[in-house]
Image (tube, one colour):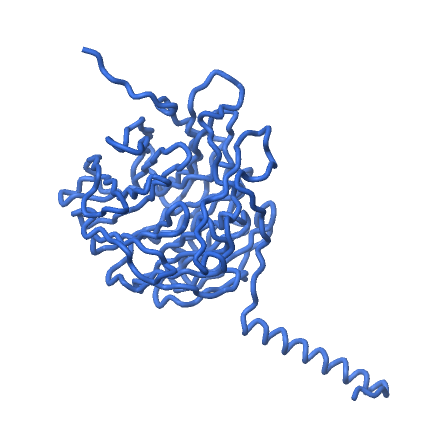
Length: 446
């Protein structure tokens, strides 16, 4: 009897744990808990929330390994604890933070990292009535940010103009997750009422919903599966068994596939790599990370392997693929936040496909997100839907134009009425001072 072994370029992917001198430690982590990941990163920095007044959080350049000094500069401009933050995918030095003080603030990180503690944001967004719990930047439109709050509202902001541009108020219980599809045309939310709602935020309504994604009462997390036109939900059964379900977004009455995972209490955070079609899953409080390769037809998903560790993770995040070491065949990179006795450390984990050749492996590195906006905020709000701009990861093509064209745009904050009035008052006071001096000199200022 012969067995069938499915061919896959990623079947032997393994995780290379970091060496001690490659980790980041000494963080006095914030004790506040919630639906957030606790750690976020881009190609230059990562961020973690800290204990202290002003809702502090650290933004650390990757080259600064080792212990985080207590005197290190931080971001501390909120009036209460920071619950979530998100890096702008098109501007490496822009990060937004959400707090229990019901505000969202946008910060500019200097090149090379913080030189002094930041207390004044670039943009201050007000509109939620209670604590803001989750933030998600739009994947293709420039400076568009989605937010979730304890007031059960989901809002969309144009951070460059500093204002709210859309809002959805169809939830009557706590919202557990918010995700965009790969084009940013549709967003999905999971809620404590066990429903998953899908819709276009520009239409300010719900276009489809899953009545009961999972029977269990614990949190449900979501991930759109790229161009597959499917969404994955990770939740619990009534017996608290963790499971993952795959749904066709055009037919949400029943899942197309269900995978029973294990019996554990930690909420699983899913991440889908649209290039390799691999779905990574890391549970809060788990030491392991599972990864499945998704397929366009039955049986929909194949388990590849599992990374196991004795260190339980408080949170994880996957980094943009532009920061990978492709010559090591590093196909994904994850930051794992570990907490022990109030002290936190961040461990970078590399997912590697074993190859003997030293040449660039184009079969395992398809074109990936270029880190450039496909459209402006105004274009997206007017109804435009564009696919993400992509670029090659081949070092020989570094600096070449994205496959779909496009160019980076500067982030320019539009001043609000209060700021303009303050500048006008200062200018008028300066004019009055100068006129007074001219009059004392005997000059006519009429």
